[in-house]
Structures are given as structure tokens and as C-alpha cells.
Length: 303
Image (tube, rainbow, N blue to C red; front, side):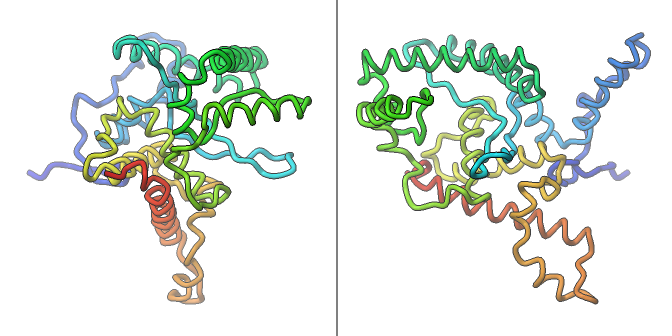
């Protein structure tokens, strides 16, 4: 008897659902209807994922793949991401490092999420956390810039203060750039268009993968085939985050525009069927992000 299979809601691969991954029925547990509906909404999607996407969704639940959001109302459109920055820790054991990350980063992600929803208390807490962290970092840079140099040299950006006293902060920024040698060995050094959507997503993907490198069990960057493995994992995470339809995201949709007219010309009336258009957009989005990702990370994965 042939086994029944179904398609994953994220990556669209066929799979057979293991019994141990099936969601429990909580309808007889006497939960309030509101809480039961909330639990079902959050977990129904998980039940439609293949084992690989299911594992991705679980291990990165507190730090989901970042989707670009454009801030409107500024002189120029600046793109931000809903993901936390990776914290670099020195002089502590691997166990302490892992323990602190498991406590601090999910909590910070929760505060950031509440802030994004307009919670004023969470916004104030987020500002306080950033201010205190930058204050500690600046104090360390004043006392021992040599300790921060190894980190500054490989980073494209450095967390610091900004304010109305432009001259004062300009002097501070120039001092930090010189003392910490920020970006001197950054893996993204080179000619690339930082405002291009594909580049923005490739940078965000690499940042998110680096943040979750241990929980995703990614190979070391210098190992053969690491670049492809990293991108494949990042793309699968993007599919999980967009419910298998990145072409429906407003920011990503523009990446799939290339070649639509040429393909539509093959159809009667020059109109591309909606399903074929979605498939093309999805493939084009993957192609362009992959090209940008491998182009940007050549030095990072170089043997």
C-alpha cells in the first residue's frame, strides 16, 4: 500500500508526516476559547511543514528570519530589519556564552517585537538597553581600544551614539573609525550596491545565519560546500517565514519582476496565468538573492 504524502507549506517538497510531529488535540483540556484559538493559530502552520522546515521554525522561533521593512517619512527610504544583532562575547566559557545567549537574545527579541507593536514601555526599555550597552562599549573603547580592534576590523558597522551636536559626534565617530580600524577586514568590502533589494536581503540573510549558526548546525565557513549549505538553509528559512510564498511580500515581490513580460509573451493574449506568475517570481527572487549572497560572501567562505 502506497504511503500518503503531502506538500510542505513552505518549501513545497513532498513529505510523509511522522506521527510524533502531529499536533495534540487540546479541545478537551478545558482551555478558554480565546487561548485555544490563539494556540491553534500559532501551531496550525507548523503542522503543514516538512520535518526540515518544522525544525527550522522551532529552533529559530525567538529569532525568525528577518523580512525587510521600509520606513516611510524620511528624506530617503531606509530599510530596517526585524532581527537582533549578534552579540560577540569574550573571556567566558562556551557554556556561559550559550546560556547568556539563550536568556538575553530571546528576551531582547520580545522587547523589540512589543516595541514594533507600539508598546511605549517596551520602546523605552529598548532605548535604555541600547543606551547602556553603547555607554559600556564606548567606555571600553576609551580605556582599551586594543581589545575591540579585532572585532571592529571585521565589522561593517559599529554601535555608537548619534545626536544634534554634530561636530561632537563627528569627532567621536572619526576617533572610533581610526582607533578600532572599523571595517578594515570586513568580508563585505568591495563594490556592491547597498540599496539594491537583492543586496539588502543577502546581507540580512548572512547576518541572521551568523546569529543562528550554532542552533542551525551550519558547517564552518571554510569547509567545502559551506556557502551553498548556508544559502540553502537561509532560503528555506525565508520560505518558512513567508508561508512558502515570498512573492507575496511587498519588498520581495519587486525582485521577481525581471523577465515577466518576456515569459508572458509566450501565452495567448500576452497574459501570464497567476499560478505561473507566482512560480516565476519565486524562482527569480531565489536566483537574485542567491547571486547577491554568493557575491557578497566570497571572502567569508574563501578557503
